[in-house]
Length: 224
Image 1 (cartoon, one colour):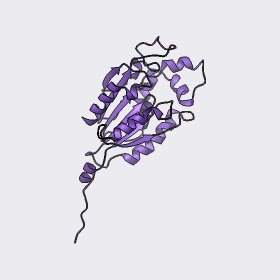
Image 2 (tube, helix red, strand yellow):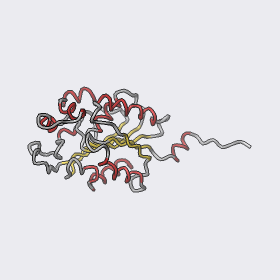
Image 3 (cartoon, helix red, strand yellow):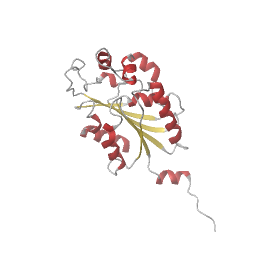
Image 4 (tube, helix red, strand yellow):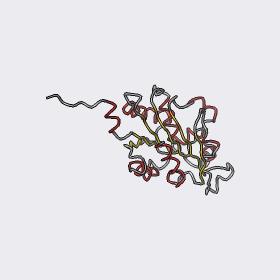
């Protein structure tokens, strides 16, 4: 009696879609924990969430991107019928874009949600650089210009749909001069080359990942 061997298409339909999260330059991923829990539930899409953790205290953008690249090779679908999903917070968007530079992802369908990404740099970190000690990632980002980041990271892969959610609420008394800003990253600094959806919510940099409007936009985009 022959055994039943499911096709790749059948396995793809049964398996939970993979979603990778990439955290910000501070917090080591703690700010994404509530969101990662939501994304595993039926309300959030029942994703198989793969948190990617890097060490911004010791790693530059190239090193963090290289580590994420290893994960991308592991999760890359074998067929165009499958899709991959990503949610990043802050600097995590740059780590993902850096990893995309070194892998052929143009035939892979993907959706990326970037929460408060410093895609065009972070002028606030440049100001802090002369005042406080920064970790390796923050110090490198503070030295990068918008033109340098645009040229280095470029556009996302061809079949990658993206949503950017920027914050416009600054409770930081040291950063009111960049208005509108989330206290760390200005709304203007969240833009990048290429096509994408862009929304602004009334949230600070650290509350964008669990602001009600952010969550509504994120879930609706990922499940569309």
